[in-house]
Amino acid sequence: MTVLDWQALADRRLDHRVVVAIGVFDGLHHGHRTLLERVVAHGGGAPAVLTFDPLPGSVLFGTSARLILSRRQKERKLARLGIRYLIVVDFSRSFSQITGEAFVSQMLRRAAVRGVVVGQDFRCGRHRDTDTGELSRLLRGHGVDTDVVELVRRRTELVAGHGYDGAKVSSSGIRRAIDSGDLSMVRSMLGHDYELDVEGVTPGRTDGGLVFPASSLTQMLPGPGRYAGFARGAFGHTVARIAVQSDRVIVSGAVDSAIGIGFARRES
Image (cartoon, rainbow, N blue to C red; front, side, top):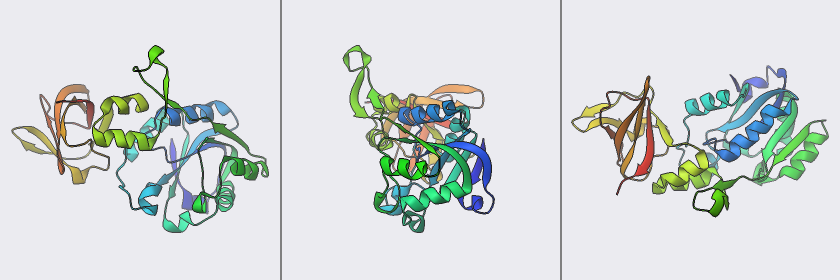
């Protein structure tokens, strides 16, 4: 997968035809993956994603900038899902002031876009002035088709027949579940255990295990407490006990090193 900078594309356009999914894609949950499957299956051009960094909420509202996925995790997952190009917008207050129409115009000048895929609740532009209907109208004027994907609902074993319980799968819902330590909820929306990326982080060591300072991590930490989980190393997974404190994460068990820390369940 090739990672491209939005600003750099203003000087050197991506002339390879692409079909673009637009969104923050923090977590790459079931809903996100539905969009990406549509991009890959489109056939009108190479599958691409246009995303924003840092998180728009952290710029606009001063909310926590911690991620569900590290940037490295996101890039690796996107590549495995078949995405050929990742276009990253440096989201800033000045960028947030452009209209949806201006955003579309800039996107089409930067890349040979042949299709756009967005979720049903997508909005963009200053004061969120452009919804999916307006986006479709703007793109249609340039001969670009728009695929609007319906919201994906959370699937849970608590519902008879293992059906959908009606709750929207969303990054904000995942964030609330991580914060409360509700890892079964997180798993139901992500499709896998929540994992911290600690690759390249040198931990401290105590008699209790490996110590990772919270300041060295870019992702959300589950609420303070003790968890059962695993440490992922270069050659596989090791069962581990994990203690989350306000300023650190302690991983104990037969663990000598880790590049990932996975959370399976909260212990009482």
